[in-house]
Length: 458
Image (cartoon, rainbow, N blue to C red; front, side):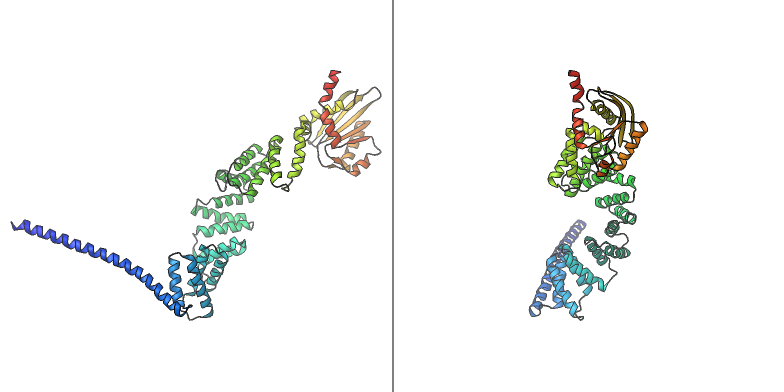
């Protein structure tokens, strides 16, 4: 009978003890928090009291700076550490850790995006200690931002000695080497940095640039293609991917790259204008003048001095309006020769023309030999059609004259879409060679399709 009663009393005693212990812990935790808060407030109160008596009291300033630093109140921390730096510079008996003061001043300035002040703090800390990772890395980073790449490399190499696996130090080492045109050295560091931080798209893009600069275009192209859809690096990746394809004469692939690049949002102005320019150039390589011209005009409207845009607009605007001029300058050799045949057949009015020979020189010009019979005279005439748009000099005209003598032609007619130099013109003054320049050629090209139709009507 007594056993159940004793057991019940024992259970109630255990519960009572547990409750008392729980309440004790609760009071203890509350008291602990109170003590910590009271400790911080007491430190601040004591520090402010000392500063009221001496505004440059080192211990008081250090106590306040330490609390502000721990609580990430960077502006107040920096202000107090700056005063401590001044005190430490004039007194060696402060009892304050000067290295820590300099370092924390610099870190606070860095958090506030004040690079000049941060640089001053890290430099002061490095005078005391040159083997600290934070000091060497951050100084190297700041030198990199100032484009002092050689200094950045020196400091970042020292930072790596303290922490060989720092992805940040590896990253900026690689980027610094790339900036001083040492792509192979840069590759080693950037690859290691990417292994440690795979989401660093900017470093991946720079690695591709290293491959490109080192003429390893296949590896570069793989990375640029991978990055084409990236919202930040995509436009630049498309630009270089398209450039590689253009250099390899893969114009369809280049056009695709540039078009993908232009579909991005928030493109940097310099990248945007170059994407348009490169896309227009690729269209021109495909003889798609109607697609290239709007791009060139847009560039001209926004930046009329960009590269040779004004020249290209002037040139291709005329070409776009004159299909025969397009053929003369840009079409494959077969189409070019067919057009030249039409000009020869219609050059002399009321004449019977028989073409006896055609020769083409590397798509630069075509020579056509024709027997011409008119009511007044008959002769063997040699035509040379030159596709070059620049100035034609005496050497080409001399060569043409030699060819005339070889085939025993009575007269030569030299046609260019460009102009002739004064030397070339003087050379032909006493020789049976007519020089036809751009303006007259344009008129001939405009009329070449109309003449047979007019003759047919008659």
